[in-house]
Length: 251
Length: 279
Ligand SMILES: Nc1ncnc2c1ncn2[C@@H]1O[C@H](COP(=O)(O)OP(=O)(O)OP(=O)(O)O)[C@@H](O)[C@H]1O
Ligand SMILES: Nc1ncnc2c1ncn2[C@@H]1O[C@H](COP(=O)(O)OP(=O)(O)OP(=O)(O)O)[C@@H](O)[C@H]1O
Ligand SMILES: [Mg+2]
Ligand SMILES: [Mg+2]
Picture 1 (cartoon, helix red, strand yellow):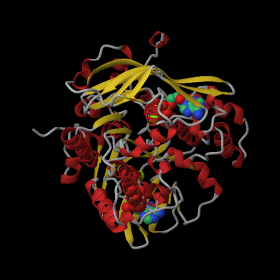
Picture 2 (picture 1 turned 60 degrees about the vertical axis):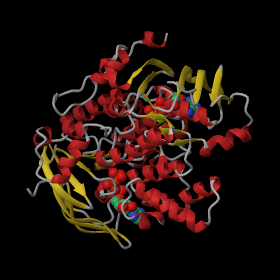
Picture 3 (picture 1 turned 60 degrees about the horizontal axis):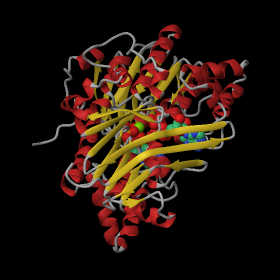
Picture 4 (picture 1 turned 180 degrees about the vertical axis):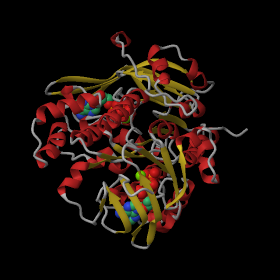
């Protein structure tokens, strides 16, 4: 674990009441790296991202981001540098705000000029026609909402992007466009990503390394090459790889 | 298919009359559903969810549904009154919505919502309904069903929300289940276990399943037939096992966009959309 990691998590623990959902989790992400998190549903993946993003204040352990030890409550500059795309876009979009309001708001909060150009650019980047600017979330399909959520995270040009299932509601052609965009931005601007996904092929394509989680713990960290060679060490990771081959009808 | 179809749709259309013009969400879709697993894949915004909602009579204002024929087991849905449509909903035809957390009541525990769904359609005491709901949660592979029963929707993970929604829709034992991206937030092992439940219902109880998904591999291995939609229309319908050999350029294009662990590449292929597909 180098000291100049973009993100360094050491012995992170998170509980909700009596349930201890993240247990002694440690990992580090290098600047410019794309790091995957996969694992069991309910194993704490979204919770980890929410802690990193400063949205959960009930945790213990140490979190360093961009060289700074992170307090429970973050400042405004933090939110400009670190953006999150939420797993459930409907819940993260305000029902009474148009796409335009949703994208204009973060720009206004951070006093960024030239909102007009930035908003059109962000919509174009995620493949949404300009005519969608004045639609409300309920007037969009599931995948269109997810793209608005991605556009909102990109519009601030953050350094770190925390992506929680960013393409799970997208058809594979739009997914390819969004993933290509994310890769291009990462290389151009040296961005750092954490990508949570259930799709091992997506993680293999996007990430250099990944962490497998189960029951709130990191069970195995591996490289994308190990994943592609289907050569993980642990039984659980192996099970995930087998399951990703598709449905088998017995008999 | 030897027996009569559960559902027949002929020339289904869904239009939204908005201040800036008409949005044609579904543009003349026809298919029949038997006691089978029918997959629907296609472009984001191509009308998959609206098709499901139209079958259930849940198209939001200002959407308008028309069809030459829309029949559930021989009953004409186009002329049926709202109250009878509502009665079909839940008991006979159910839908697992794409945004489960949004479709759940935020101020009621997820367990109580499942129990309530049961009691709407079955005579049961509160205790029986709770027991039934707990066993449903267990069936969809929720760990610690007792704890999760008492959680509110914002306290469950994405994949738990999806399974709560599936439990709630299955508890009424519908004849047709429309599942809109039901497993997109599930890890692959839990996903297969949940699919196994749906599969058993089709095989043993003769349920008809409409399975809307972006996961082409999954649809190929799980479904019997698949409809490929683009711009509100069906581009082609084919046996799911032959998806790899699809002819239509849109379907071929989709297959080319998939990331593949065995064939890594710098940049994923993307689609060239041809306006002629909608002609
Ligand atoms: N506000 C909360 N109150 C109580 N429990 C919570 C809360 N938020 C999350 N949890 C619990 O924490 C656990 C981990 O949830 P989390 O959303 O991090 O899982 P996940 O790995 O992202 O799962 P999925 O893949 O299904 O999205 C779950 O058991 C969930 O019920
Ligand atoms: N209230 C509305 N007003 C105008 N257009 C609408 C409205 N609701 C939905 N639409 C449009 O109808 C089209 C079909 O939507 P639908 O939700 O059926 O897409 P989908 O195929 O399910 O897409 P996804 O895969 O992204 O979920 C979309 O282009 C959407 O923008
Ligand atoms: Mg999650
Ligand atoms: Mg949809």
